[in-house]
Structures are given as structure tokens and as C-alpha cells.
Image 1 (tube, rainbow, N blue to C red):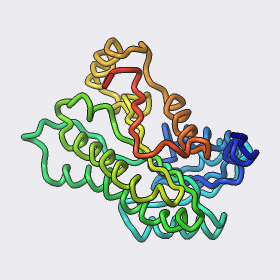
Image 2 (cartoon, rainbow, N blue to C red):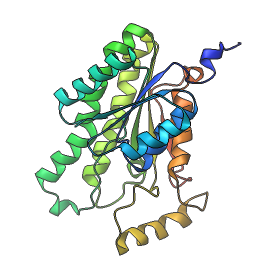
Image 3 (spheres, rainbow, N blue to C red):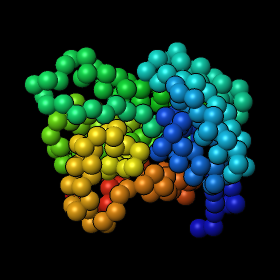
Amino acid sequence: MQLHEFERGLHGRVAIVTGAAIGNGRAFCERLAEEGASIVIADVADASATADAVRAIGAEVLVVQVDVTNPDSVAAMVAATMSRFGRIDILVHNVGHYSELPFDLLTYDEWTCTMRLTLDSLYFTIRAVLPHMKKAGFGRIISFSSDTVWLGTPYLTHYVTAKMGVIGLTRSLASEVGKHGITINTISVGLTATQRPAGDAVSQSILESILPAQAVHRADEPEDIANVVAFLALPASGIITGQTINVDGGVARH
């Protein structure tokens, strides 16, 4: 089957990337821009550095400050995108909450914070973009889980539960939206350079324990994940949906 030139990359497509100010989110924006997409850079934090990097690639950019746990804020982000570009083709939902706590010290506040940032935010964002994707007959929704769901990592019960919820949402929703030309997939990631718990000895000890367990003995980098994001965003990947793709150097070989 010959692909039309429009389908060879993401030229003419519009991608919303949440959590785009730094780290993995910035890498996703840059990679999708390299494929030709216009990028909506969405974050609660200042995303000017990401915007500069994406503009340098030559892509059109819209920067939106958004609180993805607030449905009104999410609705405003979608309205701004439609006003500027008139379409939403791709959603990359790069938001979550990570903390290490033994279960007997896990407060309900920390539990609900993790669920709100990981699951509620995904629910609000998908709900907001889905009508526009359905109308267009095309959509790519990409979210993120963690290889901790396969490993049963201790002290992360709240995090693992929320990330497993992302997988459940992906599997179920794929069955509903496929008829509209929309795919939804999840990438379960390992401990990347931008996701390690900030700057203490525990972080280093976790990294040192993980690397020998990987089949590929190097740290995961944002670009590793960004390449998978770009693949799942392409029109040519339209037969792949409801899947969880593990990108962690082979720690979890399930």
C-alpha cells in the first residue's frame, strides 16, 4: 500500500503535549516537531525554553499554561488550540506524580494526589479532545505508565496503582474509539534521566540496582521514549491500539 505524502510524517497535524516544559515532555515536543507537527506546549510551569527549542526546528508553536487537574483549565487549553489551529490530531499526556512511601505511611492525601495527577488529569484531557478527534475521523492518544506495574516495586503502591489504571483506561477506551479512526496507546517507561527522584543517595542506589537488571546496560534517555511517541503518532501506525509498549531497557521482560 502506497502512503500519501501527508501520511509519511506529521505535516499538517497538531499535537498537544502536556507536561512539556522540561525533560521528557520537551523531548516529545521536539521529536514530533521534527516529524512536521505543529506543537501545543502545555504545562503549569514556564515552557518558554521548550517553545524556543521547537521554534528552532521550524514548527509552529502555541504555549498554553494549564492545570490538567482542573477541567475548566483543560477546556480552555483545547479552546485555545482549536482557535489557533482548528484541529487536534495528537494528545501526548505526560503528567503524573511520583513519591516513595511505605504503605503504612501512605496518607490518603498522598494517595488522592497521585490519583488526581495521574488518572483524573488523563480523564479530563481525553474527554476534552475526543469530540474534535471524532469529528475529524482521526486521533492519536498517547499516555504513560511505568515498568513498576510489572515489577511490583515496593514503596510505590499508590504510584503503581495509578499507573496500572492508565493501562486499564487505554485497553477499554480503545474498544470504543477505534471506529472513529482514533488509537490510544500507553508507553510504560523505566527510570529515565529526567524521572529519577531528585538528587539524593536513594536515587543513585535505585539507578545502580536497575542498570545491571536491564538487558541494555545504559540509562534510559528521553529521546528513547520520544522515538516511540513519534511512531505511535504517525498515521501509518493506525492498526496499533489498546497496547502498552514497555520502554525500559529490558528490565521488565514480560
